[in-house]
Image (cartoon, rainbow, N blue to C red; front, side):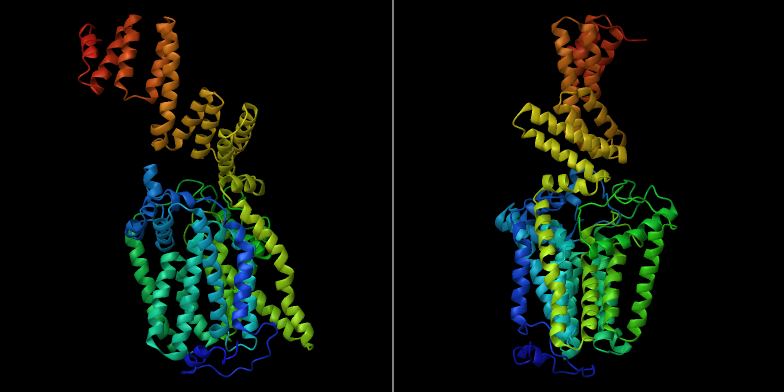
Length: 633
């Protein structure tokens, strides 16, 4: 875009400059008008993600949105959203403390869900549309920032800006972030980081105080969206040093306000999620808990390589990479050694290029900086890896690819060939990326579609097998025939048995398995499964609310059947088993006392009626029965 077509940019970049003049080469992308480029970005983004509009809820949408009491309060819940952990309502419903080390404080995206709930209620269509629009907006903002500010002094700045933005837009690894509405925190975080960078550069170019104020606000919003924004503490100085050739004193001075914002955010976060620092002992939230020191380090290094592999070849994709999707690897593993050489080499190269103020240093550090945050090296993130977690780093990746492409193109003399080679990646990647993204959007339709698909991609994942098993139970409830119902339940049990084989302490998998057996009228098997879960989570509210009443009612019915046949002695054990799950039922204790009295077991009768009176002191029949019994010696 020429300066005549963008007078605002001309006006604000005409101020004090510390950057040397740069020879600007003719553009290779045959679209010079900025707004046409914006239209290309917007239309491509809509084409890629339009079919996600019809999706429902999936994965963490329930605990973060649809079962979040604060979100459902609309405007009235926003204050509580900003003063509590993101999963506070979910943990409260389970009667537990935080299950993820370090807590999760991402109030800004959750507040946007509350606002939507205020106006539209529980409407997943609105949430998906907003997610796609925010994603497109963030890429348009990225294009604008790169073309007119970050890359404005580079020889192929407009070309590099468009290639970066377009490759970022169409990368299939972003599907989880866009199609799973809960991941709006990633989109907002990146959007506000780009906005922050824009304001930082505008202040440098114009020295207008308003831009530093806007920059601080933007940066605070980025941190409130997700903690990944902390990387800007070192990326802002790098950007000024590399792209504005600023001296170190100027870099330090202009970075100080953002350091202050980061410190303020960390203090607020500590105050709100304080006390959540203990190590998580649940394997699904701490996947390295069974690994030795070599395996912990080796597997984390291998995961870095896995991330890079997904950036180069994002297929097939999965919503889960947890235990045992990625087997532990020791430090002697060849892939681990290669990962060390690759990432250490990249860091060394970035430092060398930074000294030379080379643009690639910013790209490499952007990639490595955000990668470090999700690597589990510095603090546990509660997962081995995740596609949404590489979202920010992917910008550094596409910038490296785009820059190297243009550098190679510049070595060719014929401009026609230059143009073809410059456009080739966009054209060649467009169709396969579109096919992957649109198909993946359909996988994200709901939990049923997601889990039953992804379990085929990661068949060794305990978590994925457990959730796939649950979905087949849900499917069995809507089966039209008994044969279809049993088939779905049997499929469910296959997945659930695989889940507890991989992770015997997987409480939810035991819950689901017990429910599947219950639907097959195999109550003994249900009881076994639910009691296995009880070993690991004895105070889970599901026992009190659902499972224990089911078991108690079952054994009461068996006892009642025997009583009708005058088989009092045989009925007693079933009533005792029922009381194991309903120990606070005074009337059941009274009935047990009556059965015991009928078979002349006075000791058991006295014990049963004593419990009746303890639970209900006004129970006259139990008091009368006790008075007629001798007190056991």
